[in-house]
Amino acid sequence: MTTAIDTTTTIAAPPDAVWAALTDWSLAPRWMPGVTAMSGPVSAGAVVTFTVRGKERTAVVETLDAPRTLALLSRSGPVTAVYTYTLAAAAGGTSLRLLADVEVRGPLKVLAPVVRRSIAKEDGVQPERLRAVIEPVSRPAG
Image 1 (cartoon, helix red, strand yellow):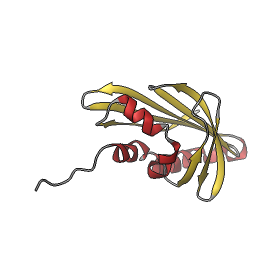
Image 2 (image 1 turned 120 degrees about the vertical axis):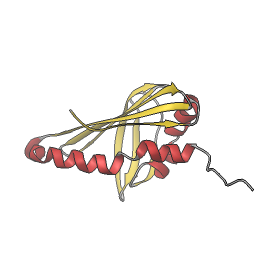
Image 3 (image 1 turned 45 degrees about the vertical axis):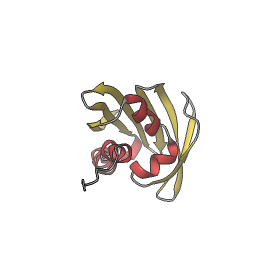
Image 4 (image 1 turned 90 degrees about the vertical axis):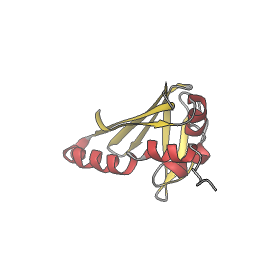
């Protein structure tokens, strides 16, 4: 597989709070671009169903090491993607890293760089969007 996304952000919340939001599928539409619904068990090997751009898709919880690592594996035709979210305590809260490895097989393999760039552009914002969901909105004093 080849890396499409490797990005990290710091969220001003403890790892347990970040983990709770990351694995609360009802919040996914707020931080996963294009996702309008997501459901399923949060357990290793479980199948998670999500709706993205009007189409139902599935992912498998490939790795679950609470509250440190969550990896979701999905396949769509010749494209296989593994999104790995890694949490670590950091100064000021939690460091959240998203690493997305994307493999393109068959005749479309020649388009792999384009597919990876598209995925990076669309989903590279996930950690920042999750941060916005978790951190309280700052209100002006007064």
